[in-house]
Length: 207
Image (cartoon, rainbow, N blue to C red; front, side, top):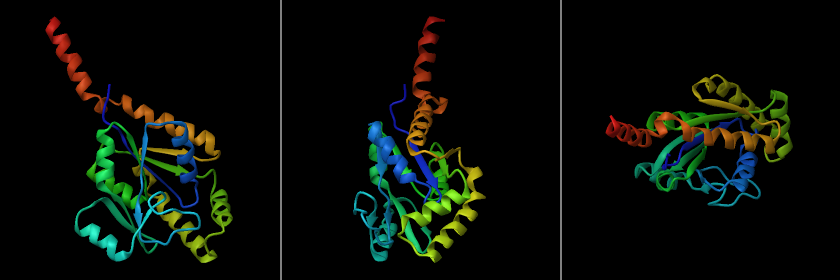
């Protein structure tokens, strides 16, 4: 039926495991395109420019803002994050489901510009699990971890603006649930208006 891909926005508290779940899902299913975000934060150990993020200077980022090259952008914990526009538009036209892994402010900006986008928020099984995952990464100071937990508290009040929530207790199971949820979006009525119109015309010819 539908030929155009779906725009999927995945958000979640820092440390909830979004990246791990997405990697598992995309390794098992080939109809996804991951939109690499740009950021002005420094790379963490093991992160690769162009794969995990496009790591830009503040000057480079603001130059792209001036040229309207972002689908959305936001400032989060003292750094810019944004979604380059062209890649997303090209992949949707190819029929790929495009995944944007972005924070709440950016997700709600996407909703304003693309009402058909599907917003999914990933949650941990508990707040204690979230704190343990953040501490276990070993990449951030206690002050930064405290800041991320405070940010999580602020975000929880805005999650009702998302379409779905999904709990990441086990990464493999969560990846399959996420895949099933995304594929179900292809069956939405507003995703199949062209097909419905063709059936209507065929039925009209019989009457």
